[in-house]
Length: 390
Image (spheres, rainbow, N blue to C red):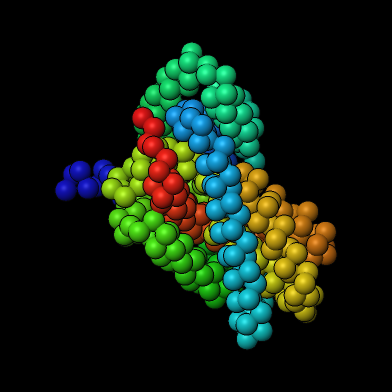
């Protein structure tokens, strides 16, 4: 019983509940301290994220040997196909469902106090820079047969694993608790959520439909039971709901994927960190559906079908480059929202607000869908007789 109560899933759930309650009763003077503590913990996690990306992807690429370039191409193709298909699915559902719905204006949010500490811990590089560095250094090490660099990357991976185990995992429950305290305090949970509850429920149903499609397709392609992957992803899903960040959930997702008996270890080490940054299917589905709702509410009409198709195709590209952090997809695609769809300031502001309501569930879909794409990769390497690299 004691082991159960101290397990990470239970601690995460406790953090969520405590955070929501505190957000309703805490005074503004103390809320400033909560905001500051949350920002510090968030910066610590964000600082370590590029190290996680380098520590897993670069060594994984060197272990793939001459097959590295091909596997990167396959992974990018899988991420883009998943994103564009789910975007088109969401667009179709929007045209079919939204006309029958009626939405009012969201209630105003209470402003969070300013960070009283102002402590900043900049990343040594952005997540996308770390991703690019990992890819280039891994490929270059293979091409030049740089044995010393390859050995250093392997050693660095062990260091990163210790950072995750002894720093990231222990502070996650506190970070999640502070995050939900802020959401509860400013009114996102108590006021905005009921207004858009129907839309959020529809989007969540869409998430589960798409996850089912991905896992069924991956299982059929790899000729393996997809349940042997999905059954281990409960903890990753819960963590993603709390962190609202694919990048911050990366360490937990790796742990979950490694428990599966049907995923190759080398594909897990390569695919999970990569997909955490380039595969944001849940966020794409959500954004497409919500831009259609905002367009209907504010402008009284939907964008033209052709315009929406262009938006979906470009959004899938932007999703590959969007950072795996809270709100990363919608922030990266604001140019599309204003340029392609023609949203004004009110439209972009409302889009950001309602996207934040469900961001945690979109992230959970992203991170869980990564397991299916890794199953695709496992099937691909086995079908093409690509030897396992140790």
